[in-house]
Length: 186
Image (cartoon, rainbow, N blue to C red; front, side):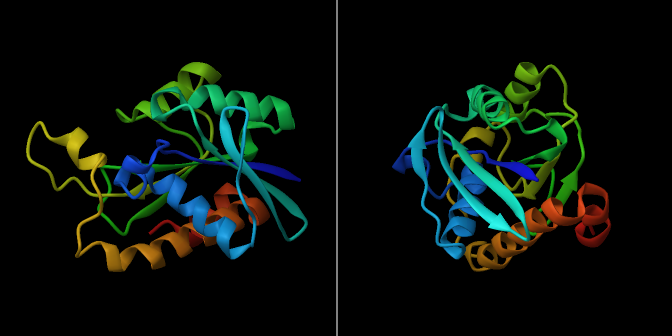
């Protein structure tokens, strides 16, 4: 049983701990916990970890957010992983910080990474874990907000939310989308 876990984000130190890079942050922590290291490979930083007899192939696309679909498509085909075994980790402005929501499919909701994945795959029927980052920004400042770091009052919440995201990833790979949604979506 193989799974492709895709953390969305942008490469480069200027994006490292921004809200838009929460997908990268989750996979970095998962790799650290499992003592795995990412290698720069075709279109992505890649590593793999094993969990309960399942192989989790972790990628952080190096294509930048707006071309994430190119990396997803390549690794999906390279590893022969069916679309239902893909999980995309994505920041979500529509959810308050602290909200994690697993979905079997859905709209891109204006998110350029998801829009590109949908365009490349030709559909939106792939699972995603939406990580709420809130929408506490002035009108017209959305880009500054998502490409900005978490506020000092938000930072203490991150480790527990990232750990919970990792639990959801492992649950997704072992018991599937529906049961994981029942267990974790509040």
